[in-house]
Length: 73
Image (cartoon, rainbow, N blue to C red; front, side, top):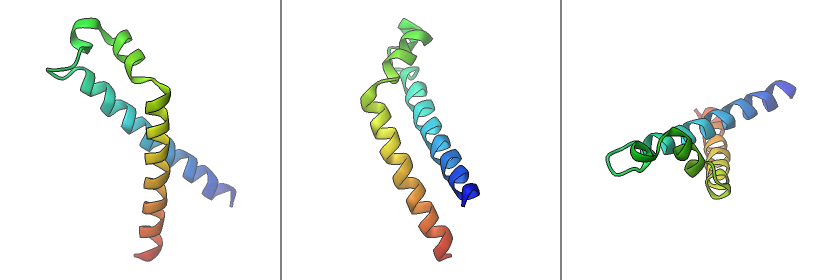
């Protein structure tokens, strides 16, 4: 049981990491302001409460979907 909880925590954290890295990369695209204002500004723009809520909901739903597919197939 303890092993399954750690696996869930690691997988959810990894999905959140991918979400934030995708947002940060978006700040440095052609239309993003990260190129002009710098990395510190981009990190501050990405790390918001709303983005954390979205990342957490997406990570938990992604984890549930992956576990469902693992058990089914």
